[in-house]
Length: 192
Image 1 (cartoon, rainbow, N blue to C red):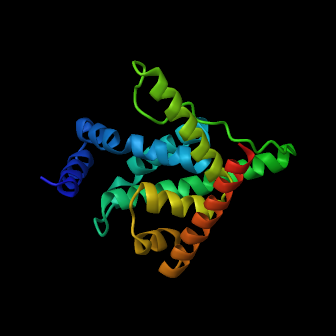
Image 2 (image 1 turned 120 degrees about the horizontal axis):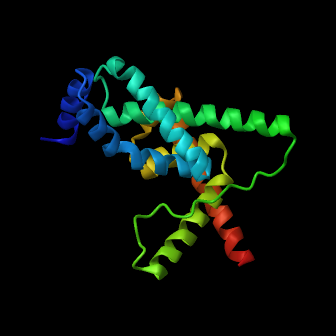
């Protein structure tokens, strides 16, 4: 049974009240949503908030999933909307507090359990910090399109549909973001 058919079976069972099916759906997608949140928000605290909000939203609205698109696309559309909401709230809080501390609270690690390989864990932490730091220099729209294209492997058409823009606009945002990431990477290499 393919992933899509499994999702459909789990959704049907969860809608009938199966806690096991709901838990299996959550486990299937929670690390992807959390990692998405880390890359978009730049910190674990906001990523955890995003993950909770996404699954709470899914739980409340699972009956509204029509099956017109893949379940994973539906989940990431919800995650996208929640990420935009978190970003707005964060901006509002920052504005109200009159703080200029835009430094992200870097993720300690996104990788799996590497406690038996300390060198690999350190390398992963440093690489993750660099990626998050570079992504933080992009606008939210650019971070979202990079996340959806690179990490979630969505097509430009799927991204455009999620963001309510044309496929050409999604492509433009993606390539503009890549160009900016290249510039940031070159700046970091010069400063190193």
